[in-house]
Length: 168
Length: 400
Image (cartoon, rainbow over the protein chains, first blue to last red):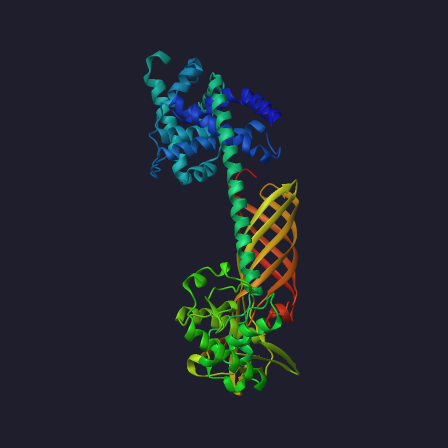
């Protein structure tokens, strides 16, 4: 038991910085993100015997934390999506040079300030790499709604970058 | 810049961020893990205790019912009356005879079946009648004795399954004649409760060529309608058997590695149809309907466990008790004696598929062999080796 506890602590030290960052991307509130991370680790330690070595361990662990975060968002009633799949307004793309100038922390803050629906789909698709079919299944929405949310999230983020003079 | 290029840059920047983590977070995780472990251990104890209590309760029910002496409120025949008498007395032979005869007298008074009593017994009955009559006239049983029979007991009988009222009778000289002598209350509840047990106790099977005949008494109180005697049922066709229907609840506890133990409770409904002569009246649509409740115990071994699928083997045994057995012919029905229990052994393989979280579906083909155990005729006695296919839902509880 003691050995188990030491191994768990070692795994925690290895994963915790990345997983807390992941949780914070889904939940704006830092304290809520900490709670979700704790619950995620408890689930991970309980389910660790289910890991079959099919893929990377970190990928498997991330999935647990993403699911835990989504459960928390559902509990908070934050996952409400409109099925309106009207395309987002066409707008000029941000220039790559402009984007390169922006620091990671700034991008993190901007993504974090997105509306819940946009942020969730954006995180799942862009950061975690889930497909629209997978996202639709995870969030109980249609594939079209997932595409629409992503498109709007991108437009929202680019608009914020463009309208902020300090990124020019 | 395309969408995917935009996404790629954002992704790289977002993943480069690591948050600082303080030690208090680990303390919280450790505390949550400890609390959950305690809850799992507690739940295991609770589930185990509930399962054990259910098994013990059902076991007591099955075996006590099987061993309890038959009781009769009002008997249709002399033979049936004898079943009322407590079976094990550690007193001289004469003393043992007395309650038997007294019971018979009481029952015979109400049934009017005195004519069936053997002459030698009739003399004894007359003697006891006079003793009882004079006893009742001279001395009523004291309330204290009636309420606290253990204080005056010199002779103790076996305890019947259901408690009738107790009385102590004394000889004219005042000496105690018998103790724990059971008389049954003349209330409807008692009548209904006991009639079905005792009347169905004297069923006997008779093998016949091309059929099966047995003798039984009606399930309704014979004396209530003034009737007496038994009903003869003769089957004159082959039986057709319906597929046995079972459902139940089982708990499985992992014991070591791939081995687990299971215990549970099952209900089974058995039905067969045939043509019969009931007291020489022909019924083409008679059927026997039996409801069994059983306890099962099995050992499981997981052969393969891969992702959501697992393949396992199992072997075990079961003991079933008929909680209700009846014969329906035309608009009539009667109870069939199904005392005792039926033992069986079984083995099979099973396939389990975990659909979500703790919920899994399983199919479990198996073979069972049922021992006869003097049970009423059913598909289990006529075709003891049976193949079955169980299917159901399994819930995984706790951190197992």
